[in-house]
Length: 207
Image (cartoon, rainbow, N blue to C red; front, side, top):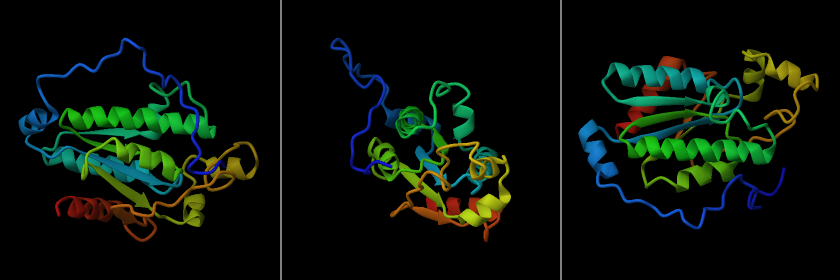
């Protein structure tokens, strides 16, 4: 892995010389007021099998049931469309997270609560996403479920393939996962149920 401070190549990062920011009449604050809610990006990170998608989906369903306008961006789902041209190299993973971060920012600006479930193994990439949001808008949820538990679950059979060498560059096996140092919320799904994980997230958000 390259040093976390080393710049990495992103695709299409140069703005055309004629690209000028157009200021909209309706502001993000106006949209939030119309929605009657506090827009946020809730970013779930952790190893494959930690329960990100499961907890994110349950959180989204709970918010929806309570009248909160939310949307879920799931790592695998996004790779079926927006990011289907990206592989699993470090630079492609960085671009994957960059694109999702920008989409999440647009959703927050529209007044939504957006839930993102992505392994996002590198601190640098998570910090890059955090930096595009205003203070308090980005909530990092670290699922610290141990590797042994994630590998035992192995819901998609990916760990087995990674151990056999079929899958290269697999986080936790052949690629690193950089643990968040200052996540707003930390959850271990090996000791906390999905329902209790959702309750814990909502409790922290309500503070």
